[in-house]
Length: 256
Image (tube, rainbow, N blue to C red; front, side, top):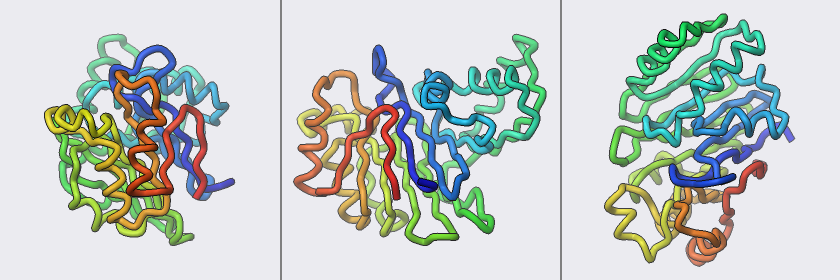
């Protein structure tokens, strides 16, 4: 397979033992794109024998720790392994300052160049070359948060939408129209929809509605709250609306 997405971490910030927070590895035309970098991402990349030298682009959705606390360690590990080529980080405003402060405090500068592309909170094209188009998607969370849409230019059937973290946002459906694989957060089940509204997250039902209206091919649910032990309840809730639904699992590969 040359085109697929691998789930690494798929839980919210309070995940627990062996329930790692958000990180995914997208492979399109044998190019690797790391999406979010929660705690444990470096370990998971090594566990699944990912060739780290192939990761040149990292995308961070927002500045809640379960989406970027793994990044400083990964940057350091790249340095220990002798990386020399540039690393591009597409991220919210403020992350460059955080990472620079940590490196300065530890006098641990990298031997390679870090290129930070700090993104505003609006939909825009951030990569547009002969192979791929990457757009941001404006999400609705407690702090500025971007989703990402990846579209292959070599094969129009290959597209991937990443939406985490956000409240129910029907406006996304136009940008996500006919997306091949959609990852949408489903922190809560509908029985806890009041918590979803309070924290600006989504339920499995709401994620399924986005997939249905967008005419997605596959829906992957993730970013689960630690309060739930049986994750099949998320799938059972969603499939009544969108049948081609999958539960994100550590290490699982979903092909286009």
